[in-house]
Length: 170
Image 1 (tube, rainbow, N blue to C red):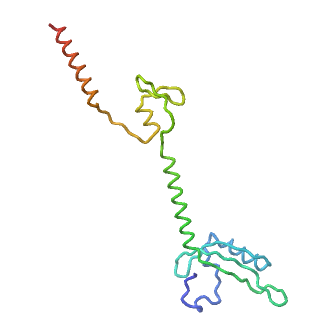
Image 2: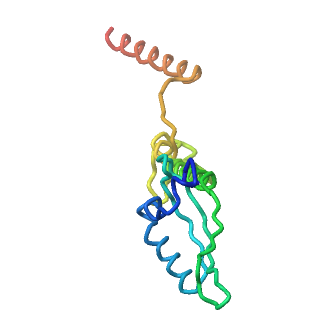
Image 3: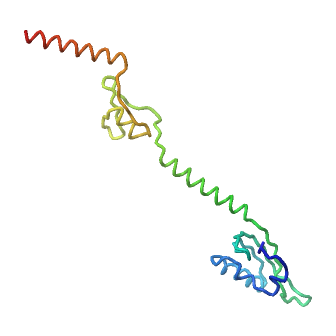
């Protein structure tokens, strides 16, 4: 876990410098508590001798001699790096999903719409063009064109207006 190549490399050395600075005080407090007769646990990060970060979970208890004096701290320590990386990835995904949900606008329920002009009444009682209402309440964008029936009617109306104008000019 500490990335030592041999026992000689670490024998007699303090582990404190390996504990990441942001966890060092909590680690020291755990050791102090153990030597005062308490047991405890801590999740903390270390930076190994080869520079690779590693997350550890350590449960420590006091170890006493025959007279009851605390002579050692006995610790069982697990490498939880993979779990911590998975938790960080999960938190990142949760934040991305929350952001995506905040951006999604969805229309649902009943919309009061005028049968004649097709305007929609909003929550404040104002009548809006359907395109504006949908644009403001969804991610939809509009382009405009004419369906065949409306195009035929428009051209018929233009033709009628042209004939009427020609008739009036005679």
